[in-house]
Structure formats: C-alpha cells, structure tokens
Length: 194
Image 1 (tube, helix red, strand yellow):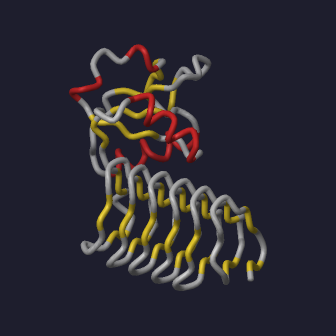
Image 2 (cartoon, one colour):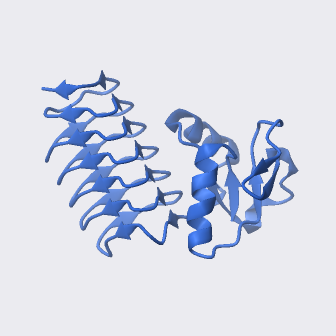
C-alpha cells in the first residue's frame, strides 16, 4: 500500500497499517524537505513508477487538502481502508474507500462512513450515524446515536454531538464543543452550541 502524506498523520496511519501487518510499498509527499517518515524513506509523488498496481491511503488530516490530493491522484486510483487492530469496529457498519479508523476508536452498528473519512484516536461514533466524504472526527470526539455529518466537516478533538443532530457540509466543530442543535453548512461553532 502507498501512503500519500508524510507528516504527523502519516505516522499514525503507518502505525495502524503496521498493527495489521500490511506491507507499505512507499511513502510520498509533496514536501521535498521530508526525507523520512518513521523508518520509511519519503519520495515526492512524481517518483511513483506505476500507481495502478497498488492501493493508496491519503494520510492527510486536513479535509480540504485530502480532497485535493484525491482529485490529483485521479478517480481511477485504488484506495485501501485502514482499521487499527485496537479499534472497535462493529460488523454491521458500511465504509467506503480511503477510510481510516485509528487506535481505540469505536464505531457502532448501523453507521455509514463515506470516502476518505478519518475516525481518529479514541473517537466514538455511536449507532446509526451517517458520515459524509472527507470528514474528520478528531481524537476523543463523540458522536451520539443517529448523528449526521456532511461532506468535508471537522468534528474537533474532545467534542460531543448529541443524538440525532445534523451537521452540514464544510463545518468546523471546535475542540471541546458540546453540540445541542443542528449546524448549518459552512458554520464554525465552539463551546456549548444551542
């Protein structure tokens, strides 16, 4: 599997892959100053000989940048899925290409994860949640049952979203927020959101 992104998030993705014994064929980044990521040498993207014979994970935490890289690699590329061996992912969920679930995260039954979603370290996604493409659920964030999160949104570290809440597209939920109401497209909220 190829990893695109050699910064901090790339390290965590590599760790998750290694926890499953998945072979890493190469690590790539646009930043030519990055020479290694953990013990892997980093190459610039144009050094990939042929990416059609291997899968990718885009290991970039920023939702906008992750989507731009996806568009650049092309829709014909094959994307893997990474679920850390210490994550708790129920058998009755559905996830799409590029999804990454980190250590100690929990994803409960009836949940649907879109493309290139990040469920980060110790995050909780309870039953029947609908998570759109390119969403990032940050470390220790909690989505109670039936929450919907629109494409490109960030649910910040340590935040809590109460049951049945709908978060629109391209929203930012600040770290530590408690979300008690629906959040409109493009909205940034923090603190107690009511």
